[in-house]
Image 1 (cartoon, rainbow, N blue to C red):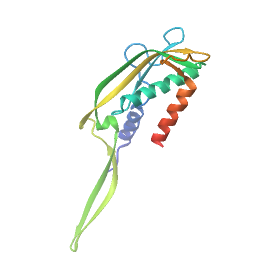
Image 2 (image 1 turned 90 degrees about the vertical axis):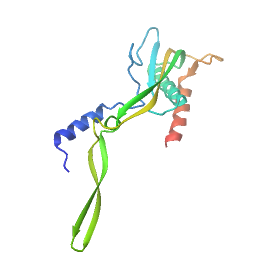
Image 3 (image 1 turned 30 degrees about the vertical axis):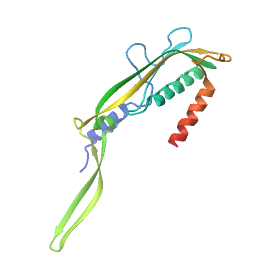
Image 4 (image 1 turned 180 degrees about the horizontal axis):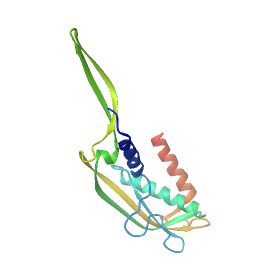
Length: 175
């Protein structure tokens, strides 16, 4: 079956619109990573479905480290922290618009039948089966600082050390 060009274009467009589950998200209120005042930033991070709270928190801290370094800071302090878990319901089309199916055909004649199997590209049903998965969103309000982080402050993170440690941890797990 050949997919009409307009449907293929629509699928390509919609797949580009699907949000990266590990990208910072915009929530109600000020936009994610927006400067509040005096070196304060809000970092909001939504984890992939079924990611655990520890991973989502680590990845939000990694994003906070990146912001600190981009702004020329050496360390950041977590001023406030908020975590929310919600059930996300989406269709197969929202998860992945393209369906990978197997087409099986039978060719029957006088001497019997032969069966052939081939991959078939298509689109998932837009209104199809819905799944519900938990999703965790982690938010921080951080203050970017320069110099040496204070010793003994559990909310102070060296941006370079935090970034290197978390990148090493997650590249080992994913690579």
